[in-house]
Length: 329
Ligand code: NDP
View 1 (cartoon, rainbow, N blue to C red):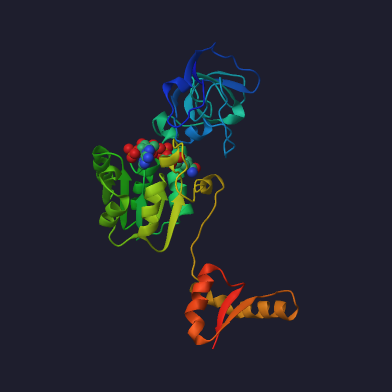
View 2: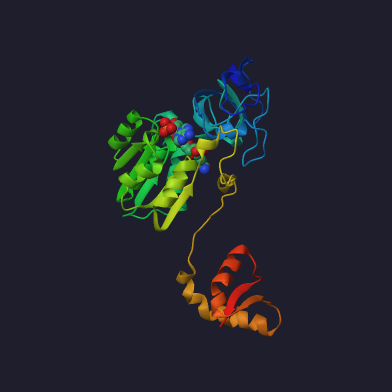
């Protein structure tokens, strides 16, 4: 059995030196275990984060131990109920030829439904990421315009196609080469561009002149900035990944921790008070009650004279107010 170990933790872009090929004996299963001859193993962007020694939503890889990740293969030995040699299974011990897997960490898949590799792509984790991110997280509705970055990759290529199949009016993708852009057009994207050709903002403006309703972010950075700029009212973004910064040694400009949105599953939602007028009556009732009962305090800073209004305004910008800045006229 040959397997890949993490030899050292990369600083910035990983190099071959960070990995080591190690030969071991083919394992034999204990009770409740199976041995799988892996046929396909997945390599994914999130693994880069696991090569750093930092706490995240998945634990870091250990040095001098095999890496792990999605894999699909055939059972060659089984000491577990429900699995027999020849079964095709999906499990989490990739980066090796033979895996000793606890049966509860393996799932049988149907090799007749699709080629087995599909369980690591279109029918697997990346396919589900696209489907759930677009339809659930971003709540795409038919008739909307969708922009997806990393569009020629595993997740992005599914996002664009699912969007079209679910009735998106226009789907725009960005990717890193002319060949990828051509592929996106063949996949049914209405517009596509190579983000190396100029500012993303300009390319997106040309590709979606009426703006976008949904942004599926695989890249972060300049792409996210351009997408926010192009968003129509009530637009939504599914923040799936920020691959542009995975190998960065310096944090990007603030907010430098924007990638925490992903691991913490945060929602940042814009709003305008004008949309919430239906709360006004309830608001006045409750606030007036708290005031009456002495539970709520408020400060006012009052500047006298209309002639001092500009100074009051500027003072407010400088922070000279405590509580509400007002002008008494
Ligand atoms: P991909 O198949 O899309 O492969 C990665 C691609 O990223 C590359 O092909 C490359 O394409 C692109 N890329 C690399 N560097 C940059 C850069 N600086 N700017 C723009 N694009 C870049 O990977 P996946 O489909 O597996 O993952 C896509 C994204 O989804 C990643 O950010 C990943 O972390 C995220 N993800 C998140 C999940 C979640 O649960 N939140 C689950 C799965 C994936 P190009 O030639 O176009 O540059």
